[in-house]
Image (cartoon, rainbow, N blue to C red; front, side):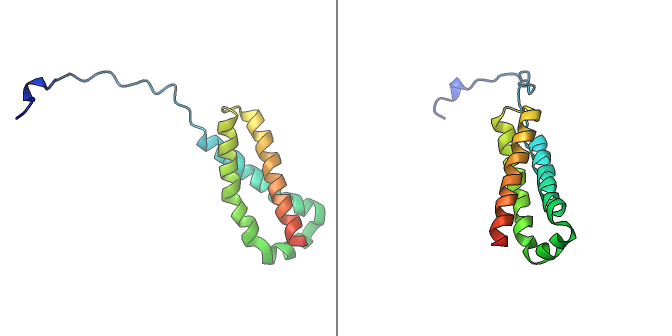
Length: 108
């Protein structure tokens, strides 16, 4: 075997510290989902019970916004370095605007 005399045997070392790792996905996902639920409630506050008839035919569009809202929550929470208050406000505003634009587009 060529170069077999240069093998180095070492003992196990201490594992690297994982304290400096940040996880933004779970809080961002929760913020995105809650902001989607809040955005879903806004048409009920404005139009009342008649919103159910509108959602009867258009629910797939609004349901498709749920994973988008979750991804937006994760992305904004990571872009704002995990600052919970700022990312909550920005995510709610962004998701409500997306929801409102879809609602207005579907209403014609």
